[in-house]
Length: 198
Image (cartoon, rainbow, N blue to C red; front, side, top):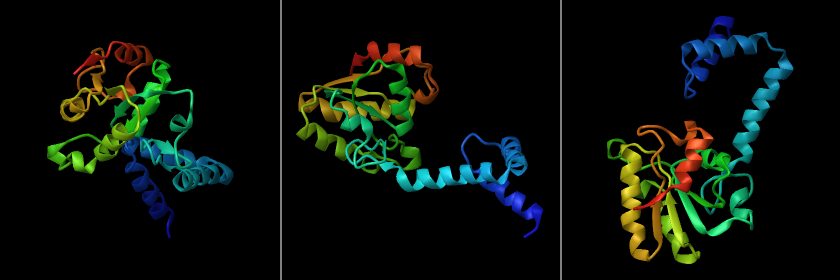
């Protein structure tokens, strides 16, 4: 295989990563070309290791290396609260605030009719099963403050309220159309503390 072809394959694969445009892909590819073989091997090994060792928690669908994630296994967490998020990366964003000590439930996305994603494609059934077997007093809905996130929050509130469980939503302070992943810790921390009932 020619050097040009090998480089193009690398550029194509890097370009498939989120947030990596053609220029960034080119910078990364040239960095890897100039790095010694050991540095490239460490990167390749880290990618293969995370793909083989990390999977979804059987309870909350966060990332885990065992059957359950570290948060679900932590007996010091407040078991009476479940914070519902769209993606595992949202758990990390909330954890960075240090403002929340309850459990989580990761939906695996949000309701999006345009993308043909309804409640059936998400981990809603598993959430309802947890609410039926665990002693939960409050469900905090922490989906992104955009149309899909608000649709998901409204659906969950309508579904959970009849169970007699308090349902709250993160307070304003997060920009509409923004992503939790990019919110600063202070803004996200205040939004958690000032959550409101739905």
